[in-house]
Image (cartoon, rainbow, N blue to C red; front, side):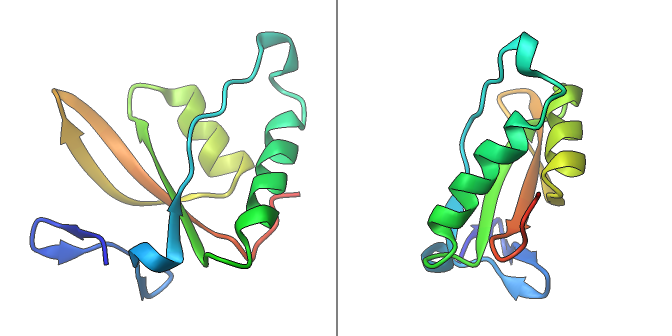
Length: 103
């Protein structure tokens, strides 16, 4: 389980567990490809690859990066499950259900 302080993070009523969750990492999209469906297509390939092993994917985004926040919450349908501060920066923890397609 992923414990933050004295509480556990949860998503869709399930406690996030290390053996059922993976950390989704960075994607950088070239400016000329932004606004296309490339992000969703790349994400979908990754989601399908991990679908049989994990029920939930998680990531974090710096709250100052509004473009990334919008892409993850609107295009990729991720849900904010927590906020935290590290090194004088504020971040969102986001989660997604690997069973749900973004296309």
